[in-house]
Image (cartoon, rainbow, N blue to C red):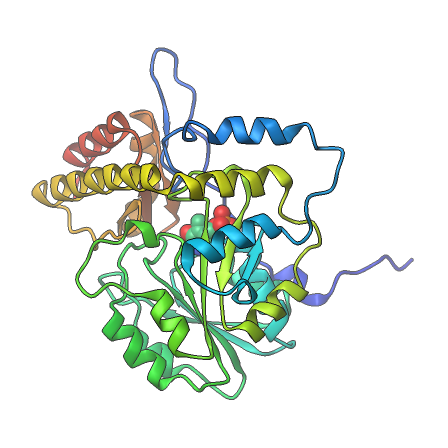
Length: 356
Ligand SMILES: *Cc1c(COP(=O)(O)O)cnc(C)c1O
């Protein structure tokens, strides 16, 4: 008897491996450093705003998310028509592929990079073209430009790159954009933009303003600490933003998520102070690791990459025993989020005892 069959490509979708919660160990606080979450609790006022909105759960959210669009347009100084809000920037990646790719069309991205990319691409029946990152974890933008073919519809530039850490410079991005055909969408995934501290950082808004094919994706999940609420946005030239809104999940962004995002935007200065504190911790961790002989790539996000190869599982196990959970990528390396001071201390402790 025949049974319903999903499209053939569905079987090819790689699984999303989520960061594990910490192992509970009696007498020891365990820390989750496996999902690049913000270790700070929500800012004062955000929870209260959300609590006030909870009573409306019998109603659908504002489908147009109009207050959130207005707040973003004001904060970024862009027209509302150039925005698309979504259920996290993962939602936007899905929408981009759905809106721009027919089956068999190609999406070029660095690898290893954000693991949701090949999932979204395959789910839409498009083809992933993975361009290996350089040995220091940076994007090989020359090779990515060379990988563009007649079938390429989208190129994803993840900066800072999750999981390796480095970010591209504006000069590198400009040189790259000059080589990309104008009909190819260039997505600059800025999930960690608030954490970047480097010379010649990418000015995503300037890049989007100067080109008709540049899309920025940003999220409230990382710096803003709203990962559990699923809200992100794209900034794009109006025709692209309209296409993203057209394929968006109706009522996807919940009322509480909209309210939390607006309340967080209103408290941007306090949030950015917390980001500064996390960046200071990142500097302390990276300096400590290098002093201990570890050759870690430049870390521009809220995480550090250990290119451990075959020793990755052992490292993850040793971390677990110290009460920190990291994100291992089997046979490649481990990504460790910057977390609470105590958690970061334990990472340094692990790095001092684990063979380089
Ligand atoms: C975390 C992350 C995102 C965003 O995730 P959402 O929670 O869906 O907004 C997007 N891109 C990269 C590279 C990330 O690491």
